[in-house]
Length: 297
Image (tube, rainbow, N blue to C red):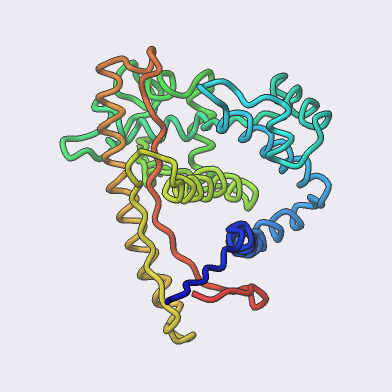
């Protein structure tokens, strides 16, 4: 006679430690991610309390909009459960969000708009798609007409002065203006920081969030990162130059595609109907310079 003995243990005692381990791994990764973020915040005199208020607002905003049922916003009680905040705190923050207090609005400048359309509009480009050299004055196909069309209420003279200052145009002896760059370089470290956070880091992290969402039925977004730990220190300068050249060439080729879509959009007049999406494509190069960053590839 055979005797079979079965030992049954609660499944919770296996699942709970696994969940805690996964949670800790995610937290460890975010701690690494936050090191450069905190370095930037401290550089601008932004302390822990200010960051916590931003973090709370973001937690409440995402929990309210992304985790509702049947398309409705998440109620205050569920947001409190999800975020660990009190219901009173959730209500305070949601009221602030609804009122529009400290809302983030990303806008381009008139200078950037004029420079972009100088490279994009058929009236201001040659047969190969390169920006034409423009005379300053004139009703048609001049720098002044370009600024009047796409520079808002900025006078053409002021636009010319600023474009020369930031180094995106050159003026010939006869007064003709030639575009020498298709993008505006941020004029200060602060401008560069905001540009990179909004159009670089945000886009890349949004890609990660999308591609790691197991509940999403959408196809994955393209994302490729090449990495190695075997580059000799005295070769990084050369590698940095090579990567910079290739990234720049790639970015310009994608920008040409975007310009084509913008031209088609103007023909279809879709912007009046909101039937358009914001799209970003990025390529990233990285060198570890933080000796205290604790991670392994």
